[in-house]
Image: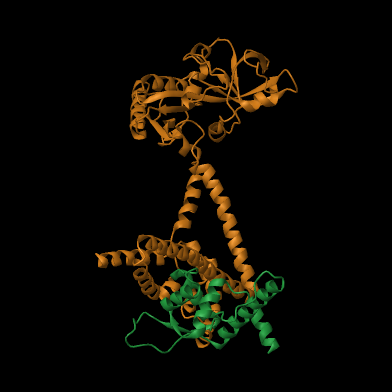
Length: 412
Length: 125
């Protein structure tokens, strides 16, 4: 039993030794273990209380001395690094400048990568939002016509909600200076597709999205605050847009950012109006591809499945109206990917280049510093031999070769 | 050696644990466990050093050159066991610290904070 207990205590004590730096452990570890076992034997006569006291004292000693030794090691290496840098101020300045530029550039690029590629879109379950484009003759996606949108929305079983929108520029008159305001003309399903509920009032009703219906508008939060002083009684008020009277029926929440409109159509949307199309309207012809169609696919439906279904439906439309569709078919892409399609490949390439163990950029950088490193190496070996000769602490010698030097910091 | 004494002052004051370890080694060469025992006995069990604390001190004292590893080694002893001895520098440092403490005690005594020393008081060897 005592042998088993000794072995268990040994294991525990060796685990405690890991609190010390490796050099320290190699120099004193076995000696400390021998001393500890003698302490245990001596404490054994004093009973469990004395044994517990010994373990508590040993743990506290290991924690405090281990920490102190690690800090001493760090101080030593830092002092050495500063001395090395001070000996070659020119190289030190170049290394520090290179590090500063590298860190700055990395931070700036990561901020862009995070904002553009990694951060999810600010809508509920954004991964379910897709852009639906008609297939061009060359296989690329194009915009969508109103009848195509309406047919796909009516036929699809994989889509929960679908909307189409075009851009609009209206003159806002009335209180204050008249101004041109960018906006979107949207189908009444627009807000439901994005999963957004207005902060004040409501979205559009189906009957408001028909030709000749009463003119209504939904304001962005920014326009409501800037132009109407955040008037809480704005809903129901008449506003003048391009000489026509519109009734405000809602105000969007502050966190609804229609960034998709800026990215896909270059519009800073501040006012939303119903599309009010009917199949017979001239701009609603089957070849009038000027709308962006967005869909929210059903929960649990894979993107590929929704894409295949919508593509099949679009091909059926092309068979039905062969003169109106040059190729036939639909291309379905995630909204997030569509919004970052411009900078995304470049940013991802940069991110991969940083991870690559030996990218060409790194190789060029490394070779640029290699000559400096070679010059330093001879000086460093000389310092090492001098250190050996004067009998420096034997475990510290090798670490001088690995402690931060200008070259290693630059390559890091 | 006033200059040498002034040099020693920069090492002072010593921590209580360092002082105890140096005092323990002032009598004879000792291995780690013997140092622990000596310290505990001299302080009536009031100071019980942990192994980590002891070897942190031993490492620093070796680096400072106040103690050295003894070359004498018993053939029967555990090969892991090393014995340590006080160097001349170490002896001067611990003496300087003892004198500093003695000065403080004398100051307290002059203010009647302490009774006069008994004639048979045991002093560290």
